[in-house]
Length: 329
Image: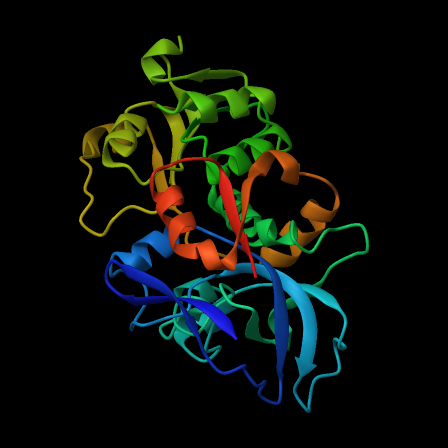
C-alpha cells in the first residue's frame, strides 16, 4: 500500500509498505481521509514520536475492510472514526482515570503506523461507527474535536463567562464553537492571520482582532485559551486573565518554549493555570456532537489533497495556509 513516511527529522516522503494485517481484536480501516495536525509537525521536528521512521496520521476515518478473529463489534463495510489513543490500562495513571497520562502512552500515527496511508490498523475498541448522514471524509474532524472537548472538561467554566482565544486555526475555531454552546456570554479571538480572523467572524465570534490591546476589556477575561503554542501569545494571554479566572494551555508548544508567571498575582487573584493533553473520555462525545452538526466541515476543512501530496500538504500546513488540511488516499 501507499503511505506517507516521516523518515527522519525534517524528512518526509511517500513510500510503499506491505498491507497491514489485524490482530485478534483489531480492524483494518481503508482510510477515507486523514487530517494534518500540529503534532505531525512536532514529529517531523523530532518531538513526540518515540522512534522514526513512522507513518503519521492520528486524525482519520474510513471503512472497515478487515477484522481480527475475535472482533464482533463491527463488520466489514462499517464506516468508523478512530480514536488514536493507546493506553496500557495497567499503570497508576490509567487506573486512577488519567489514561492520557499513561506511563506507556502511545497513539496511532505517533508510536505505531497511522492513517496517512491507504490502510491503517486500529483496536476495535477505538472505533466509533458513523451514522449514515455523516460523511466519512468529513469524520477526520472528530479527533481534533475530541481534544477540544477534553479542553473544556478541565476548565472551571461557568455560565456567562467572557472567553478570549488566541489563535483562529482549526483548534481555536473548535474552541469557539464549544464556547458558544457552553454558556459563554461572549467569545473574542486574537490572531495575526487576517484570513483566519475572517473565518472566526463567519462563525459568529463576538470580536476578532490582531491584538488583545484592540479589545477594550481592561478587567480581563474569565477564561483565556491559548490555541497557538506560540510563546508570545502565551505570555500575553497569561496577563489577560481576570481575577478568579482560568488560563488554559491548549496549543502545543515546542519543548523549549517558556513563559514567565507572577506567583503573587496567581495567589492573590486566585488565577488557575491548567493544561489539556489529547483525548480522555471525550471521543464518543465528540462523535455525537459532530453528528449533531456542531461543526460545518465546509468551513473547517479548507483543503482536500491526495495522499501523494502529503509532503506538500505538510509544508502548506507549516506555513499556516488554510485551516484543516486533509489527505485522501
